[in-house]
Amino acid sequence: MILAGDIGGTKALLAIYETTGPARPKKLRLLYTKNFSSITELLKTYVSEFSFKPKYLALAVAGPVIKGWVNMVNVGWRFSANQLAKKFGCSEVFLLNDLEAMAYSLPFISRKHLYSIKAGHQDKKGNIAVIAAGTGLGEALLIRKEDSIFPVATEGGHADFAPWDELTYRLHAYLAKKFGHVSWERVVSGPGIENIYFFLCQEKGITPRLSSAKEIGPAGLEAKDPLAEKTLEIFFYAYGAEAGNLALKSLATGGVFIGGGIAPKLFPFFERGIFQKAFLAKGRHQELLEGMPIWLVKHPYPALQGAALFARHRLAKGQRKEHEFSS
Image (cartoon, rainbow, N blue to C red; front, side, top):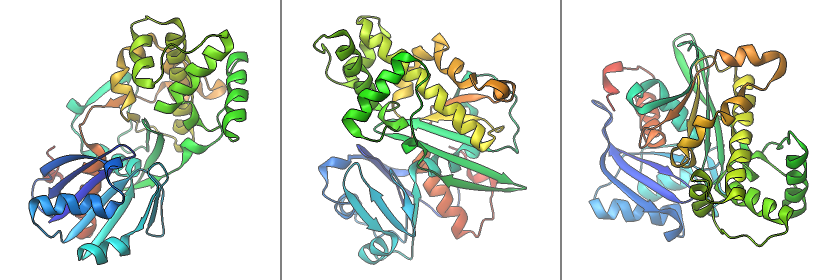
């Protein structure tokens, strides 16, 4: 059996998968990451509940995986595949970045789990770009070569944020004073929504009426607060601009896929076309981007599924069986 997990900065989703047959999760459980002091404690809690010993472990984690080591900066956890293998007696441990795992799942996800944000002409043999705003901003690629697929993790969310008008140049200066380096994640994320809103309040010389992204988002959607609404306009333009950057860098003719917890909650704002306008605003390459479709991923656990599928394929030495992917 494979113990698979999607370990985020806020939540962790765990399940058991068989190594063969339909790739369906069993004993699915949601845990809150910050209730645990370490990844070991979190996994022990799940394993103890079901009294089983996993032979394999496959985790999608919110952080870079480098030489078998993970550094989850949002929760202060650092661990390695070897440590987990020894701790739980696993034959093999697979560690993937969460967006890398999500990217791996996409060829096997039914269209019923995808919602079109922008039409285009998908090249089914083309590369895929994945971008997901949540606690942070994740980015990944899925590269296709002949009949093989290769997920590629990135830390693109930490690349330099690029302002596009006078207001966002002032936003950049505000964030630089506060954080030093200004990344896309400082704008396109839950904390980013708060950063934009507090900046706009400072611009207007008023005391913030709202205190968190959970309050700012609904207030902006319902046009109950002008600064919250303006916050979402800036957020969605920045989100679309960086999605376009990623699409160009990866030549994502296979499509751009949006994940993360924020997009579904603020979905009606996509209808304003701000995201799409920013995505296409790439000068001489606008026509190239016009051909790339964009989807919102509505699957409830794509990173979990991707981690499990990656482990299954590796254990089967890459011999893919299409009938297995029925989720």
